Amino acid sequence: MSDFKLSKHQDTFETQKRHYDRKVVIENKMEQIPRQYEEDIRRFKEYCTNTSQQIGTEALLDYLYISLTIQRKN
Image (cartoon, rainbow, N blue to C red; front, side, top):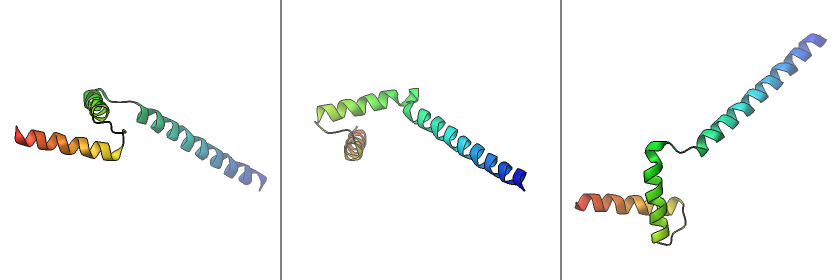
């Protein structure tokens, strides 16, 4: 009976450790910017600076709207 409880506790600890390790890997990946997006992100940040907007969802929607309407005219 004692072995069963120890084994169950061991699984729980290992599962929690695995979940934590997975979370760390995902958070590290989230901080990395893929090369193919670096230029887009740079342009978006410049747009925010030029229009005095804080970087955020509304500024991104505005940037995308302006980008699409300008591309449509050209």
